[in-house]
Length: 287
Image 1: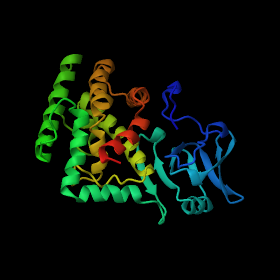
Image 2: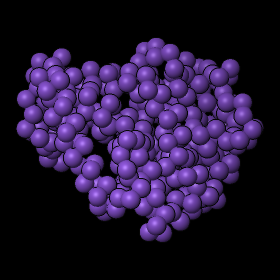
Image 3: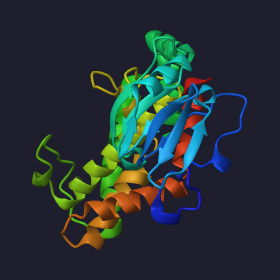
Image 4: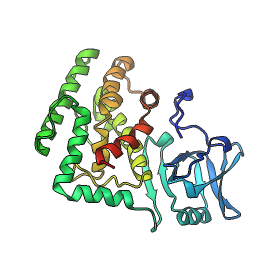
Protein backbone atom coordinates (compact mmCIF):
# COMPACT_ATOMS: atom_id res chain seq x y z
CA UNK A 1 0.00 0.00 0.00
CA UNK A 2 1.30 3.44 -0.89
CA UNK A 3 2.66 5.83 1.71
CA UNK A 4 1.58 8.98 -0.12
CA UNK A 5 2.74 11.20 2.73
CA UNK A 6 6.35 10.19 2.17
CA UNK A 7 6.87 9.82 5.93
CA UNK A 8 9.98 7.79 6.55
CA UNK A 9 10.66 7.63 2.81
CA UNK A 10 8.69 4.35 2.56
CA UNK A 11 6.69 3.26 -0.45
CA UNK A 12 4.30 1.22 1.69
CA UNK A 13 2.51 1.86 4.98
CA UNK A 14 1.93 -0.71 7.72
CA UNK A 15 -1.18 -2.82 7.13
CA UNK A 16 -3.79 -2.31 9.86
CA UNK A 17 -7.50 -3.03 10.19
CA UNK A 18 -8.51 0.51 9.25
CA UNK A 19 -6.54 0.65 5.99
CA UNK A 20 -7.38 -2.71 4.43
CA UNK A 21 -8.88 -2.32 0.93
CA UNK A 22 -12.68 -2.16 0.93
CA UNK A 23 -13.45 -2.90 -2.71
CA UNK A 24 -15.67 -5.20 -4.72
CA UNK A 25 -13.01 -6.11 -7.28
CA UNK A 26 -9.63 -7.55 -6.37
CA UNK A 27 -7.09 -5.16 -4.89
CA UNK A 28 -3.79 -5.43 -6.84
CA UNK A 29 -1.43 -6.14 -3.92
CA UNK A 30 -0.57 -5.61 -0.26
CA UNK A 31 2.99 -5.37 1.02
CA UNK A 32 3.91 -7.07 4.32
CA UNK A 33 7.16 -7.12 6.28
CA UNK A 34 8.45 -8.31 9.68
CA UNK A 35 5.65 -10.59 10.74
CA UNK A 36 3.97 -13.95 10.24
CA UNK A 37 1.14 -15.24 8.03
CA UNK A 38 -0.84 -18.10 9.51
CA UNK A 39 -4.33 -19.61 9.66
CA UNK A 40 -7.07 -19.12 12.21
CA UNK A 41 -10.51 -20.65 11.57
CA UNK A 42 -9.72 -21.07 7.86
CA UNK A 43 -8.90 -17.37 7.46
CA UNK A 44 -5.46 -15.87 6.89
CA UNK A 45 -4.20 -13.63 9.66
CA UNK A 46 -1.15 -11.39 9.74
CA UNK A 47 0.70 -10.92 13.03
CA UNK A 48 3.30 -8.15 12.85
CA UNK A 49 6.44 -7.72 14.95
CA UNK A 50 4.52 -5.61 17.50
CA UNK A 51 1.94 -8.36 18.05
CA UNK A 52 -0.86 -6.62 16.13
CA UNK A 53 -3.22 -9.03 14.38
CA UNK A 54 -4.98 -8.26 11.11
CA UNK A 55 -7.23 -10.71 9.28
CA UNK A 56 -6.58 -10.44 5.55
CA UNK A 57 -9.47 -10.69 3.04
CA UNK A 58 -7.30 -12.69 0.64
CA UNK A 59 -10.21 -13.41 -1.69
CA UNK A 60 -10.20 -9.67 -2.56
CA UNK A 61 -6.40 -9.39 -2.93
CA UNK A 62 -4.60 -10.31 -6.13
CA UNK A 63 -1.13 -10.72 -4.63
CA UNK A 64 0.77 -10.47 -1.34
CA UNK A 65 4.28 -9.00 -1.43
CA UNK A 66 6.31 -10.54 1.40
CA UNK A 67 9.20 -8.33 2.47
CA UNK A 68 12.07 -8.89 4.93
CA UNK A 69 11.39 -10.70 8.18
CA UNK A 70 8.23 -12.48 7.04
CA UNK A 71 7.31 -16.13 7.48
CA UNK A 72 4.31 -18.05 6.21
CA UNK A 73 2.85 -21.40 7.26
CA UNK A 74 2.06 -24.24 4.88
CA UNK A 75 -1.64 -23.99 5.74
CA UNK A 76 -1.65 -20.27 4.94
CA UNK A 77 -0.19 -20.97 1.49
CA UNK A 78 -2.95 -23.54 0.88
CA UNK A 79 -5.66 -21.00 1.71
CA UNK A 80 -3.97 -18.32 -0.41
CA UNK A 81 -3.84 -20.73 -3.35
CA UNK A 82 -7.51 -21.65 -2.90
CA UNK A 83 -8.36 -17.93 -2.97
CA UNK A 84 -6.24 -17.36 -6.12
CA UNK A 85 -4.06 -14.91 -4.19
CA UNK A 86 -0.48 -14.93 -5.49
CA UNK A 87 2.64 -14.46 -3.36
CA UNK A 88 5.86 -12.59 -4.23
CA UNK A 89 9.00 -12.62 -2.11
CA UNK A 90 10.67 -9.22 -2.34
CA UNK A 91 13.24 -6.96 -0.71
CA UNK A 92 12.33 -3.97 1.44
CA UNK A 93 9.63 -1.90 -0.27
CA UNK A 94 9.85 -4.36 -3.18
CA UNK A 95 13.09 -2.73 -4.38
CA UNK A 96 14.40 -6.23 -5.12
CA UNK A 97 12.40 -9.15 -6.51
CA UNK A 98 13.28 -12.73 -5.52
CA UNK A 99 10.52 -15.18 -6.43
CA UNK A 100 6.83 -15.63 -7.14
CA UNK A 101 4.28 -18.26 -6.20
CA UNK A 102 1.00 -18.58 -8.11
CA UNK A 103 -1.78 -21.14 -7.84
CA UNK A 104 -2.57 -23.47 -10.79
CA UNK A 105 -6.03 -21.88 -11.02
CA UNK A 106 -4.81 -18.25 -11.05
CA UNK A 107 -6.72 -15.86 -13.33
CA UNK A 108 -4.81 -15.74 -16.65
CA UNK A 109 -7.03 -13.34 -18.60
CA UNK A 110 -4.52 -10.50 -18.56
CA UNK A 111 -1.65 -12.80 -19.47
CA UNK A 112 -3.64 -14.31 -22.35
CA UNK A 113 -4.37 -10.82 -23.66
CA UNK A 114 -0.68 -9.95 -23.38
CA UNK A 115 0.33 -13.12 -25.26
CA UNK A 116 -2.24 -12.45 -27.97
CA UNK A 117 -0.86 -8.94 -28.54
CA UNK A 118 2.79 -10.05 -28.50
CA UNK A 119 2.23 -12.97 -30.89
CA UNK A 120 0.55 -10.83 -33.57
CA UNK A 121 3.12 -8.73 -35.48
CA UNK A 122 0.76 -5.84 -36.21
CA UNK A 123 -0.66 -5.70 -32.67
CA UNK A 124 2.80 -5.98 -31.15
CA UNK A 125 3.96 -3.00 -33.21
CA UNK A 126 0.89 -1.02 -32.13
CA UNK A 127 1.77 -1.64 -28.46
CA UNK A 128 5.40 -0.66 -29.09
CA UNK A 129 4.26 2.57 -30.77
CA UNK A 130 2.04 3.44 -27.79
CA UNK A 131 5.05 2.91 -25.51
CA UNK A 132 7.23 5.21 -27.62
CA UNK A 133 4.44 7.79 -27.89
CA UNK A 134 4.69 8.27 -24.12
CA UNK A 135 8.38 9.13 -24.52
CA UNK A 136 8.06 11.03 -27.82
CA UNK A 137 4.68 12.81 -27.55
CA UNK A 138 5.62 15.32 -30.26
CA UNK A 139 7.13 12.80 -32.69
CA UNK A 140 5.36 10.99 -35.52
CA UNK A 141 5.67 7.38 -34.38
CA UNK A 142 2.63 5.90 -36.13
CA UNK A 143 4.54 5.24 -39.35
CA UNK A 144 7.79 4.07 -37.70
CA UNK A 145 8.97 0.48 -37.77
CA UNK A 146 10.14 -1.21 -34.57
CA UNK A 147 13.78 -0.88 -35.62
CA UNK A 148 13.31 2.83 -36.31
CA UNK A 149 11.65 3.30 -32.91
CA UNK A 150 14.48 1.47 -31.16
CA UNK A 151 16.98 3.67 -33.00
CA UNK A 152 15.14 6.77 -31.77
CA UNK A 153 15.21 5.41 -28.22
CA UNK A 154 18.93 4.68 -28.35
CA UNK A 155 19.67 8.24 -29.45
CA UNK A 156 17.34 9.63 -26.78
CA UNK A 157 19.03 7.69 -23.96
CA UNK A 158 22.54 8.67 -25.08
CA UNK A 159 21.43 12.29 -25.37
CA UNK A 160 19.93 12.08 -21.87
CA UNK A 161 23.23 10.85 -20.42
CA UNK A 162 25.08 13.74 -22.05
CA UNK A 163 22.42 16.27 -21.04
CA UNK A 164 22.48 15.33 -17.34
CA UNK A 165 26.28 15.06 -17.32
CA UNK A 166 26.45 18.66 -18.51
CA UNK A 167 23.65 19.78 -16.17
CA UNK A 168 25.42 18.45 -13.07
CA UNK A 169 28.96 18.96 -14.46
CA UNK A 170 29.87 15.29 -14.11
CA UNK A 171 32.50 13.57 -16.24
CA UNK A 172 30.87 10.86 -18.35
CA UNK A 173 32.57 8.20 -20.43
CA UNK A 174 29.45 6.18 -21.28
CA UNK A 175 27.35 3.42 -19.75
CA UNK A 176 29.54 0.64 -18.40
CA UNK A 177 28.68 -2.32 -16.16
CA UNK A 178 30.32 -5.72 -15.78
CA UNK A 179 27.85 -8.30 -14.36
CA UNK A 180 29.03 -9.61 -11.01
CA UNK A 181 31.66 -6.87 -10.67
CA UNK A 182 29.67 -3.94 -9.33
CA UNK A 183 32.71 -2.38 -7.66
CA UNK A 184 34.51 -2.07 -11.03
CA UNK A 185 32.12 0.67 -12.23
CA UNK A 186 32.61 4.38 -11.68
CA UNK A 187 30.30 6.14 -9.22
CA UNK A 188 27.68 7.31 -11.74
CA UNK A 189 27.44 3.88 -13.35
CA UNK A 190 27.16 2.22 -9.91
CA UNK A 191 24.23 4.45 -8.96
CA UNK A 192 22.59 3.81 -12.34
CA UNK A 193 22.92 0.04 -11.86
CA UNK A 194 21.42 0.18 -8.35
CA UNK A 195 18.53 2.45 -9.37
CA UNK A 196 17.76 0.31 -12.42
CA UNK A 197 17.69 -2.84 -10.26
CA UNK A 198 15.30 -1.19 -7.79
CA UNK A 199 13.01 -0.08 -10.61
CA UNK A 200 13.04 -3.60 -12.10
CA UNK A 201 12.08 -5.03 -8.69
CA UNK A 202 9.08 -2.76 -8.31
CA UNK A 203 7.93 -3.38 -11.88
CA UNK A 204 8.30 -7.17 -11.65
CA UNK A 205 6.20 -7.28 -8.48
CA UNK A 206 3.54 -4.98 -9.94
CA UNK A 207 3.35 -6.86 -13.26
CA UNK A 208 2.91 -10.22 -11.50
CA UNK A 209 0.34 -8.75 -9.08
CA UNK A 210 -1.78 -7.55 -12.02
CA UNK A 211 -1.78 -10.98 -13.66
CA UNK A 212 0.61 -10.13 -16.51
CA UNK A 213 3.92 -11.80 -17.32
CA UNK A 214 7.31 -10.03 -17.11
CA UNK A 215 8.61 -12.53 -19.70
CA UNK A 216 6.46 -11.38 -22.64
CA UNK A 217 7.77 -8.12 -24.11
CA UNK A 218 6.97 -5.91 -27.09
CA UNK A 219 10.19 -3.99 -27.69
CA UNK A 220 12.84 -5.94 -25.80
CA UNK A 221 13.42 -9.62 -26.52
CA UNK A 222 15.97 -12.31 -25.77
CA UNK A 223 16.31 -11.19 -22.15
CA UNK A 224 14.90 -12.65 -18.90
CA UNK A 225 12.35 -9.87 -18.23
CA UNK A 226 11.54 -8.11 -21.51
CA UNK A 227 8.20 -6.60 -20.40
CA UNK A 228 9.88 -5.21 -17.26
CA UNK A 229 12.53 -3.56 -19.44
CA UNK A 230 9.83 -2.26 -21.80
CA UNK A 231 7.99 -0.54 -18.94
CA UNK A 232 11.16 0.62 -17.19
CA UNK A 233 12.05 2.78 -20.18
CA UNK A 234 9.00 4.93 -19.38
CA UNK A 235 10.43 5.97 -16.01
CA UNK A 236 14.21 5.66 -16.18
CA UNK A 237 15.06 9.23 -17.11
CA UNK A 238 13.68 10.71 -13.88
CA UNK A 239 14.05 7.74 -11.54
CA UNK A 240 17.48 6.54 -12.61
CA UNK A 241 19.43 8.82 -14.97
CA UNK A 242 18.77 12.18 -13.31
CA UNK A 243 19.14 10.52 -9.90
CA UNK A 244 22.53 9.01 -10.79
CA UNK A 245 24.11 12.24 -12.00
CA UNK A 246 22.69 14.38 -9.19
CA UNK A 247 23.90 11.94 -6.50
CA UNK A 248 27.33 11.69 -8.12
CA UNK A 249 27.83 15.34 -7.15
CA UNK A 250 26.44 14.86 -3.62
CA UNK A 251 28.43 11.71 -2.80
CA UNK A 252 31.81 13.22 -3.68
CA UNK A 253 33.27 9.98 -5.00
CA UNK A 254 32.03 7.65 -2.23
CA UNK A 255 29.15 5.27 -3.06
CA UNK A 256 26.46 5.14 -0.36
CA UNK A 257 23.76 2.51 -0.96
CA UNK A 258 21.52 3.92 1.81
CA UNK A 259 21.54 7.36 0.23
CA UNK A 260 20.71 5.86 -3.17
CA UNK A 261 17.80 3.85 -1.72
CA UNK A 262 16.45 6.85 0.22
CA UNK A 263 16.53 9.21 -2.77
CA UNK A 264 15.08 6.55 -5.07
CA UNK A 265 12.14 5.97 -2.68
CA UNK A 266 11.52 9.71 -2.48
CA UNK A 267 11.22 9.98 -6.25
CA UNK A 268 8.98 6.92 -6.50
CA UNK A 269 6.61 8.45 -3.95
CA UNK A 270 6.67 11.89 -5.57
CA UNK A 271 5.76 10.54 -9.01
CA UNK A 272 3.18 8.11 -7.57
CA UNK A 273 4.85 5.30 -9.51
CA UNK A 274 2.79 2.46 -8.03
CA UNK A 275 -0.41 3.96 -9.42
CA UNK A 276 1.16 5.00 -12.71
CA UNK A 277 2.41 1.49 -13.47
CA UNK A 278 -1.11 0.06 -13.56
CA UNK A 279 -2.50 2.95 -15.59
CA UNK A 280 0.41 2.86 -18.06
CA UNK A 281 0.21 -0.91 -18.60
CA UNK A 282 -3.47 -0.68 -19.42
CA UNK A 283 -2.85 2.25 -21.74
CA UNK A 284 0.02 0.74 -23.74
CA UNK A 285 -1.75 -2.62 -24.07
CA UNK A 286 -5.00 -0.92 -25.04
CA UNK A 287 -6.98 -2.67 -22.32
